Image 1 (tube, one colour):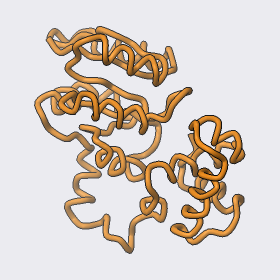
Image 2: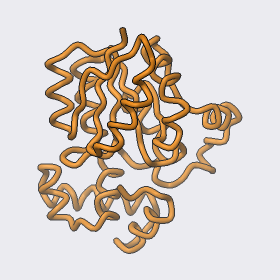
Image 3: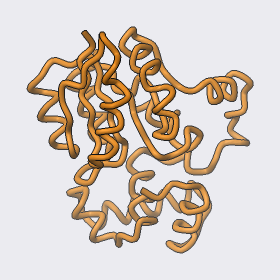
Image 4: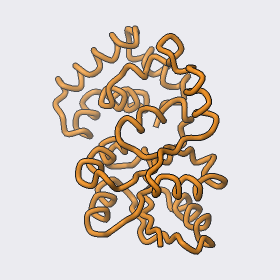
Length: 210
């Protein structure tokens, strides 16, 4: 029996995922987590075959949770679930240690297949993205500029685009305002942008706002 922990802050999403899996005889949703800390607590307290993790959680970034999970339980598969299109985040989360990436739009038709694939030790992405990568469409000249950012720089960009100022971001990430300002400076340099308004516009145009 495949024991699944679903981590998502939206009750309707959790209910929908549970419904998709309800008729599968060898799978069971044995736990539900509503935020990042809850995810870590349940992951540490139980024995799981896979965690289905929303990359956007209310208290901590899904990237941070993913990194903690992979540090503490490197063999535990984590299937990331997101509203963001694959070309925006899939490669980034796979590099961070995820075993697969699935958009919420594709979940009704691909969730079961994705879970089986990562539980068996594979990496799961859609056929469309796999073909794009195989044909070399991810070359440096064609990659979106935000792929050059570190995970923390990317996270700061998302939070800025979501309307938070540097002090609010610093408080949320438990970092100093000076550190966040440094991330902002690096972000602007890497993406060849000059102002906060340009950051926000870029994030909105590329669907990167949390």
